[in-house]
Length: 486
Image (cartoon, rainbow, N blue to C red):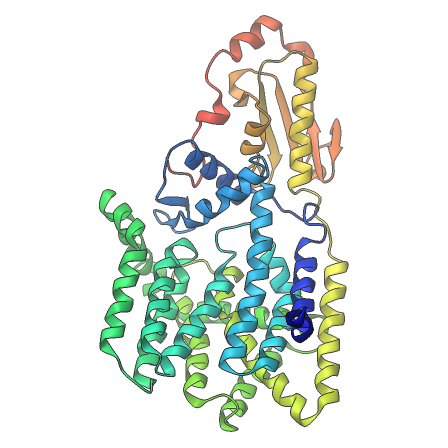
């Protein structure tokens, strides 16, 4: 009880974060191809195939590591092999993240900064919705805050602990997002700026990295360094060698500014985006000049943002917002410390800003538009196909899709857990057609949320013909799967 009395505000922040991430969790669970793949991989591992890799990334020939899928296993088992287990894992990791941001910032600065940063992480609409995603990249922001802590340890001369932590984190990058490698360039900077320079500790960290990276090393040796060659190929792609970097820089900056804009909740206010990012930069300079942020840490934070912008400007990767999630600790450090400093000078103004942040982000969350094509709807439409097929005594079915490219993915595991034999339409099995959105066709037979279903033309199928079309293998189990490597 004494712990609760002393830390009631932190406990309240943790419960707020838990509520925002679990409220209407299933209704907002956007189950798609990534979640479908994860379920297959978990099943594959439990079936005795101990995998070194997960799904293929957006860079052809490069795969994400297998750690996320192994962590998923107890959650899938607990929920009867339902993909809901993946959603629960994300909720658990998000609460761990809130606690981590509190502890790291409390340690680097003070308890007040820790509480402010933890609160912002807990309540930011952008972070809440990112934390709800049941994907391997979801723990990136958790990884990033511990990377910040490791850099701080090196700066403060706590070399052994810092490099061991860095060794673990660098070794985990393959399992999260290879884009995080760009932050590795900050380690030698921290070493040069450190109060002490312990070469032995640095080599210990390298040894830890090699140990943690053994699954990656084994996979690469076994498969002729397929990923290393693919990464080098992407770095040397034509797009990175010709003029046009200014356009790429402009694209990167648009996403950087957009992320800061949304992180702070200022996207609903009549404030230009460039003014928001400009304010963040000026605030960092001010905090360093006033010695609120120690100058060496200020250099690390500035470079943290700069190396991200530079790397993605000169890389051929088709950049999306989630690649930039690793920048969140840098933003929260600047704003969190700034708010704590403001509290010393004008307490009422700090609370006005915090209150405005709460109102904006709570309103955005409570008024979120529900797509109604997620897990609940997809599971329901699969169940409906099974019900109708059973009513007509079909031993198997075929499923076609009328939708935009990519939206036909994310159903196969749902058919599997229903124990259905599903073939391609060319097999001449009775064809059920899933439609999304409804506007793509003139009619549908039934709708579940935003998904539509067209039943087979029952009259064209005979019992003997259906039996023959269903006599082969279950294509749902045997056909190749995009992004999946046996």
